[in-house]
Length: 116
Length: 116
Image: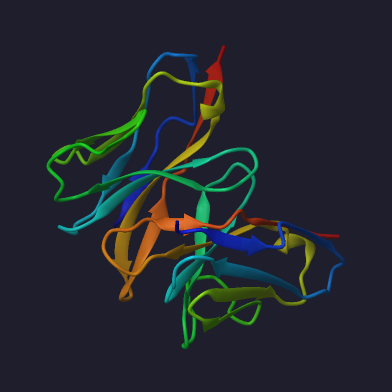
């Protein structure tokens, strides 16, 4: 149980393109999902907490207008990288947590974004 | 400040031997949770083991055990009978409450190489 699906797994696109990444909890409901960014050989950096039915909570230094997050249902959150530039190239990974208790966050497989 | 520290950037171990990956944490919270995740080269984050701050017993999951020393604020991961497939990055993480939300903060990670 507790499977999180992330799509697409890899994106290569031109500078200026907007890219949407989807994160779905397949077998549980997630009122909260999380978006992370990971640079090569570095740790995960939390970008924002995505809340179903309300605005996302962004971490300090993360541009809200650059990284648009929508959490329209209990099983889907999307991250849109708007007008992407080469410096946005990175590994983006989402996670979701089952509501109750001390359950761990379950992660999607990540998206490798390359902006040319 | 809440922080996770992994002081070993890289470790290697002989197949079938046991290995300990170090993790220390800093928090003033009384209630917290500690997690270990494995990240293979393919990028997905795999949950391994969880330890709650009030748990009196060290957590175990198959070949994984967590050496929880609360007074020392350490939560080392022990992998017994290492296998070649254990080669990966390993991240220690702590659940914290910030801005009203549960979040995970990650250590820098330890790259484990298992040699035949």
